[in-house]
Structure formats: structure tokens, C-alpha cells
Length: 137
Image (spheres, rainbow, N blue to C red):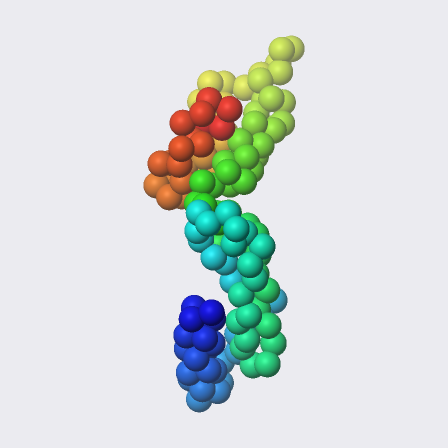
């Protein structure tokens, strides 16, 4: 595959640069991912080699907390955000029936614990077709 040969050649150049500047690439945190709509190529794994070791191909890779699937629908990312913001027991405890805290404390807690999770990287995934479904957003 032309993509693999080009990428492996670039990694050979990168390896020389890393050796020159005494840098190391953490292969445990490095993955490959192909973004495409071609359903027949779903199981395709890239043969990308760096320093004699194959870099694994992940089905859904995560970068800076955002999960990327092959079609960039952000389906798994939206599910994770929904679960993380929904299952927030701290706010439920603060709104107890026999006692409770002031509205300003509840607002601050909601902004810190829920809004920050939902808002993080929203410019990336907010235009997803799945986000328009009421089950996610």
C-alpha cells in the first residue's frame, strides 16, 4: 500500500532525527488510525514500523480526551460525554430534600462538573450528525 510505504519512509527520517536529538517515541502510546467511509476496509491494519516495532492500529483512538472513530461520527465520544455528565452523584447529593445548599453553590458545581465536560472540544464533535439526535445531546 502506498500509504504504508510513504509513512514508513517518513518514520525512518524521524528516527534519525530522534537519534540525533536523543529523543524517544513512546510506542505504548502511539497508534495508527485510518479515517474513511470504505466499509470493506474496516479490518485493514496498517503495517507501520518504527525502530523495528509495529505500531498498533486502534479501532477507536483517543487523543486529548476525544475519541475518534473511522468515520468521524464521534459516536463513542458522545456516549462517554453523556455517561460522564449524567452520572454525577455529587450534584444529586447537594440537592438533598432534607437539606440542601444554596443555588449559587449548585450552579457553580454544575458548571464545574457537568458543563466543563460537555463543553470540552465541542467545536470538534458538535457538528456530528449523531449530536443532533436527542439521545446524545
